[in-house]
Length: 157
Image (tube, rainbow, N blue to C red; front, side, top):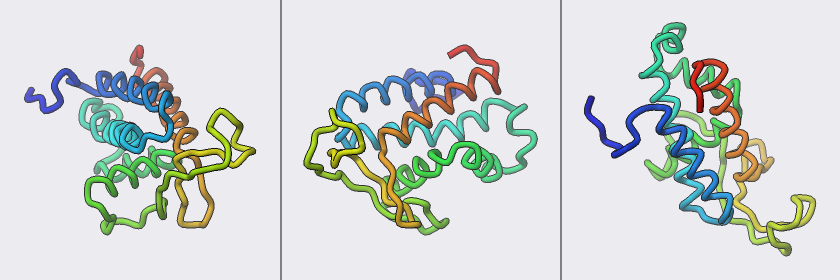
């Protein structure tokens, strides 16, 4: 097997790298660079799992079918897809994104306060006009993937 990712050789390695990246991001939750790495790792796991786990891929004849299924199970993966593809291509033209824009919101309060206050954060504005916080969404994705690997794939993570 040819490897293009150094010591990240398989989906379990990528999941572990994602978990480390998220922990690192959470220590610096205004870091766009760290957030983008988390989004990329979390979205690329879809492809890696699809290619490595035949039992998972069998019900889904095409990768796009598997992607749609996972996004229906974890809406936050849609946000990660948009950040990943928007970062790679600068724009998204192959599908209609869920995320309208991303920004670093400079609030009146530090992120040590609850979200009930106007806190500084990385914020996603969705196409329906609502917004979500990246830190909350990436935690949902981490929890989803860790549970998926354990419960669906039978892997110890």
